[in-house]
Structure formats: C-alpha cells, structure tokens
Image (cartoon, rainbow, N blue to C red; front, side, top):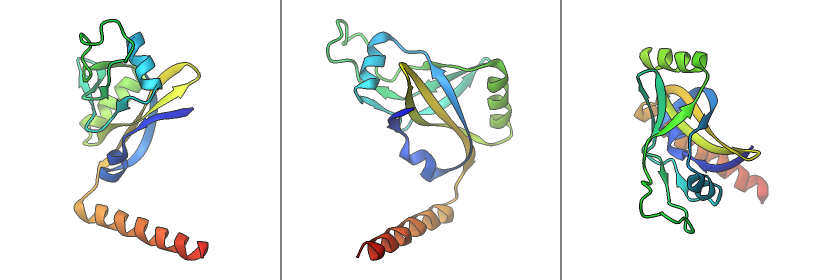
Length: 146
C-alpha cells in the first residue's frame, strides 16, 4: 500500500495499540486530489454518530481541473466503510475511554483507504520521553555515520 498522507501528531499525542484499515466514501474529484497529494489529516478525527463512523475535519483540496471546484467543501464529513463487527468494536473502544484517531491515508491498488489508530492519549511527560528517545537515536545514527 502506498502512503498518501500521514497524521504525524497522532503517533505523538496518542499511544496507538491497534490499527484498522477502513474504506472511505469519496467523490471522483476528491480521489484525484488525494492521489496527487493534496490531502491533510492534521486536526482530523473520527466521529461516531448513530452507529456510523465519519472522518471529520480532514482537508482535501478541490481538484484543480474539476468542473465545479468552487462548490466542493474541503472539510466535509466523509463516511467510513467498515463491517458491522468492526464498527461495534470501535464504538466499544470509544466507550471504554480509548481514542479513535485517523493515522494515514493509503492507496491500495486503485482504492483509497484510511488507517485508523486506537489508543490512549499520552501525558506531557510521555511526550517529553518520546522527544528524548528520538533525539538520542538521531545522535547515535550521526555518530555511527562518522
């Protein structure tokens, strides 16, 4: 699967324990726009309403060559295509206090998929530890390179 867009804050702010790949309902112009790299998951989240899951606040820039690009809303809610048992598990995880966040947009052959991460939010000291670990591994890599 090819990575089209990534939510870098999701892995920094949340300790992801499970990942689910879901389909996403898009218009034809949105598919072309996402494949060209004009999508962002920054600030996006998964909303659960009436037994359905929606990707909310994900920005997809209208396709440049679309006929009605001024009529398209870039941050509209997009329905996630999940099996009923997957949806029930997501609802149960959300009710148990875990967070459900979008982590990446992927291309599987010709289809666009959304990777969903399920995890617990990190505390401030956990984030500091993550930064420290990343910096030390970067320093070790620099020393090994020399």
